[in-house]
Length: 618
Image 1: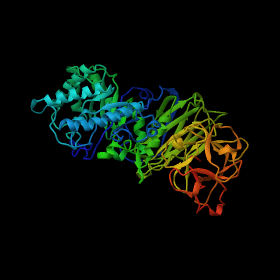
Image 2: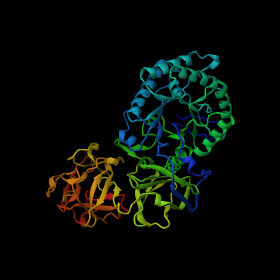
Image 3: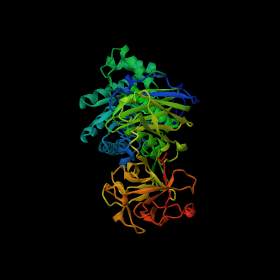
Image 4: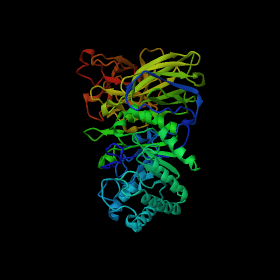
């Protein structure tokens, strides 16, 4: 939802929002310096202390405001599941010219979409935060009366009864975000006192009908420690005096710093002897120009420090609001969803398991680090608040991890590109090196040249020589793909749009005693790339099959220099000497993959269906 005007002191710009629920974990482990305010170039350092551990990751930042189609059917499941996404905030905004404030029929259109999106969220295991202001129609694109105008609450009370009744009739469990941005005229065009009366009436009706429901608020547009400070003071005094305090305190960070905002709210609560143990939601974060991997990783880090759940703001309008997973995805001319760089950032965030460990930030640079001693990995997400330069990552107390072997640790540094806002096929490996550990410490340097990019560091034991990557056909620009996300033996591989899912992630595992030779394991199915039946004939299908270490599941990487890309290879089946090939030199999505006699180097520049770009190769 985009208001046409904003409050005094705020830049005029279009807007839409996000929500979540909260807990505290990293805040006790890390410093909370005020972030850099503007872009700058300065070499800096960050430090990870693996001995100081917190709880398991709960993925505070993995939520969105809207982003599903109105019927809740798209985007496909893996775009959500791969991120450990778990929060959705919606209420049918902009689907027609009004809501209940206009007519019951207009409300019904918005309600039908809200119900569909709720059901999809529940099916994905997520929590749904309902937006009554959108169901009323106050989404900045319509015109209707405001609740309580001229002291008349009749229609508003009927609206609340209708909404509560619909929620109960459909056995929905939702969080109630009673009204969005009451400090911003496009969303609340009346006085604060009228809003507070509305809040009390709404709160009491929900509490009476649904005693265990969680109530969220006040979801202010401005920072509780900044321009909205006095507004918050009045609000807190009122909810305390009337016993209508929310279960979850919420506000928006557009832009801002979740850490300093959370501190401001805690100070206000403590000054009033109000409970400071209630969770926080930054239920919209990241301005449109902040939705890049670098800035997104910084927000993830700050939300984790604040112990606050967050939902990415959604700046689209109309049908665009109800699609694209809140600007994590784009579409090509065929209507196919493709990930933006930030989608891969959230996928990496969702892969961080085990325990959060202490991360000491640097100049304009913050991050989130975990160690998983059972899985034998440690993972570090790095974000920029506008800073560039060489960032030294200091790795301390590595003796408390399971990744050190014989005084060494493997460090894989990858860049997640913003790509100018275009689709991205995946992270690119910058370096894959073995570091010497001295006094239980090591370090590496990130050459950060673009603040819009994010970086990740994955630490592994040196004996783990697996390389994880996608294989992109240089002929079509599409990815080697496990057809229909199958887990079955015998599924023939295809090329398909690079969707970023684990069905396209391949683990290249070196074969002992054979140089540059690998088994290739699909991360979704756990099965190996295989030449069907061990055939040596042209056109034999490339399938997936239970891994068995046979030669028809071994592939030698032959570097290709024809296109000038150091990550280009032919994949040569060991048993047949033939190449993994896109059938008929096709550029069509769904074209089948087979083996074929390898083309000579002299023809590869013009015949590229046997050239695969392996972005994970260092």
